[in-house]
Amino acid sequence: MRIGVVSIQPELARNVSDMKFDDLYRAIGMNTGNLMFTTAMYRQLGDEVKQVDFSFNPAAVNENFEAIVIPAANWLNQMDNWDWFTDLIQQVEIPIVTIGIGLQADTNQLGAIRVNASCERLVRILSTKAPFISTRGFLTTRYLQSIGIMNVVTTGCPSLYMPFPKDRKVAVSGSDTVIQSTRYYYFHHEAQKKNLNNTLFRAGSKNRYDMVYQSEPEEMEYLIKTGPHMEIDNPRVSGLAKLYCLGSIEELKIYLGNYTKTFLDVDEWSSYLRSKARLVGTRLHGAIISLNSGTPAILLAHDSRTSEMIDFAGIPTVSPKKFGDFSSSKLKSAFEKVNLEEYIARRDENHTIYKQFLTVNNLKYR
Image (cartoon, rainbow, N blue to C red; front, side):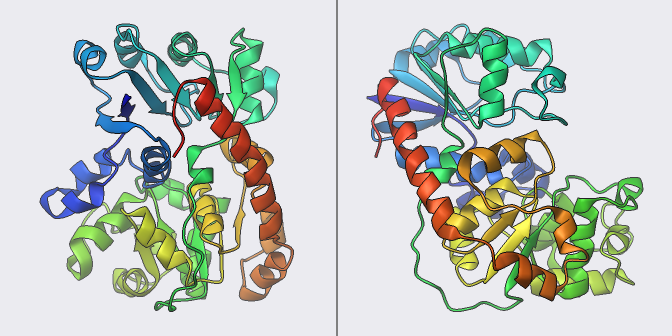
């Protein structure tokens, strides 16, 4: 069976040297976490699989494939305009299986969730293209049912079911603790706010914890392309030292060069995490790849998406208030209660549902 997967390129790391950073950043969907569920999808489908661009030709898709799979993300919100994509979807005559679609909202209260007309139109059309669609969590499922979409199964994200070798690797330089925050482009006024994500950036530099970047373009460009040639007067980086509470851009370079990472290959990412003792932060896929690699992780909920995945998948979490200033003693105390076995048991239960979902949609599971 020929399956087309609508996604970013699954093996993007091979082409990095030939790409400008801005092109690379767009190619990963501005978040390396997208590589997690994309790679999972290619590894899990047991048929002949080929990547399909989001701006595909419907006629070519109908001719060359027997089914289309869309590993989705937090596509249900008030911001995105999906009309262009829905117009393409409507022209596809073969089955389209949507996996892991989810809400992005500021509330977990069902009655208060708002999704714009474009996002709702997309999910309504997708629900007609296969026997079932799947969601990332129970909140999204309840929302879809509340608007009359009933052929819904809660499977979580495909990345939950992607295993990695559990052998411990030789420790790499840096600290035993990995910390992750959430930010896209740097804006001075946002960096001065007192919030959880800014606290995490500052805790990383203050305590010299390792930090892994998924969507922070200034730091990622430094690590992938620029290196020590980062210019002090570059408007995209000149304020970063303040975000990290460092005295100069030179101090920032030292921290970035010795303690920070970004990954375009999920196996390298997993191997790095297997050398660490713990991971804490607001990054969903950062926590998932850590747990699946055998390294304890705590995910700090900061929106409906992280909350519903924690609820569904049993991802360890605590209130950010428990960490205070994220000192080493606070971290070690919190991680004493992290039980990997509970997460693994929940994952195994959900895995059965996930495989059944693929089967009922006529997809082979590898």
